[in-house]
Image (cartoon, rainbow, N blue to C red; front, side, top):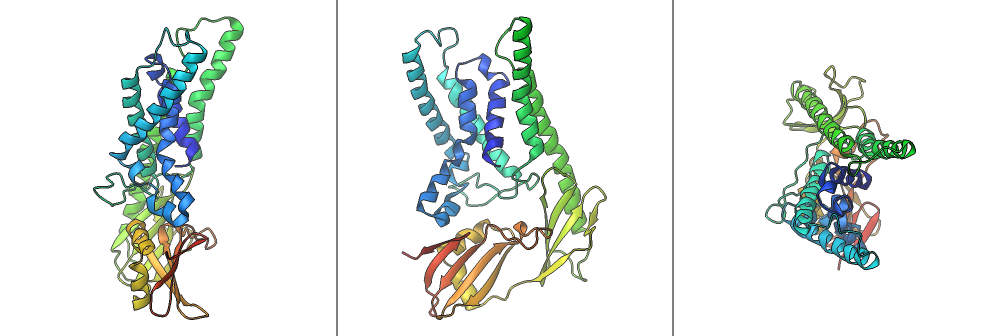
Length: 345
C-alpha cells in the first residue's frame, strides 16, 4: 500500500488502547507501520537495485524483528532528548520498552499484511524462500481505507475540541473507540473484497476462451469499487485480458476482451531471462511476457512485462516493465527497470 495508509493504520493501532499503557505508543506504532519501506534506500543504487530488494528482507517475518528494533532505538533517542528538555514529562506514564518493541514488531507485521492484500505481493519468508505471496483484493491506493483510518483519528480530535469548549472532563487519551471502529471497518472491507474476488475468479475459471480451457486465472482489484475486477487468463496458446463484474458475476461485460498470443521462445529471450534482472523479474511476475526488437547497431532489446498490470481499460498504459539489452553475441550490455538503464558492470 502507499505510505499514508500505513501511517494512518499505525496511528489507529496506537490509539486503540496501547497509548493508555505506555508513553510514546502512538508515535512508535506510526513510525513502525511505515518502517519496512526503508528498503527503498536501495534506489540510491538505481531502480534495478530498488526493484530487486523491494519487499524482501524488511518485508519478511524475520526481517521485521530488525526493523522493529531500529524503530525502538530511534524512539529511545527521541525519549532521551524529550526527557532532557522536560524531566517531569514521563513521570506518570513512562515508556515500557519491552511492550513497545513487541507492539512495534506486531505493527511491522501489519505492514506486511497490508502489502500482501494488493497485487504486488511480498516475500514474507525471505531469505528462506524467494516466493512472492499476494491476496489480490485491494488496489495499492484504496480511498475507502483512507477515509476509515483518517476518520478514526479526526473524529475524536473534533470531539475533544467540542469537549474543551463545554468544559467536559477527560478520563484518558481520546480516540480509543473511534480507532477500534476504524480497524473493524478495515477487516469488514477485506471480507467483502475477498468474497467478491473469489466470485470473480470462479467466473473466469468457469468458461471457455475461443474453445480453449483456462490453465490459470487471476483477478486484480480496482479502487473503491469492490465489484469491478481485471481478469487475466492463461491457456495453452494465449493469454486473455478482460474485465469482470463480480456482482453479476459476468466475464467481459463490456465486450472488450483482448487475446494475446504467447511470445515465441528464442535464444535471445532465453539469454535475457538468464540475466540478473531477468531472473528477478520472472521470480516476481505472475503473467510475464516478452517482446524482442533488433537494435540499429546490432544486438537486441528484450522487454519484460507482467500482464497483471496491463489493465484493458487504461489505453495500453504499461507499468513496472523492464528491459535487457544484449550484444550480437547475447552478452548483456545494460539492464533497465522502468525508465532507467543500468550499464553492465
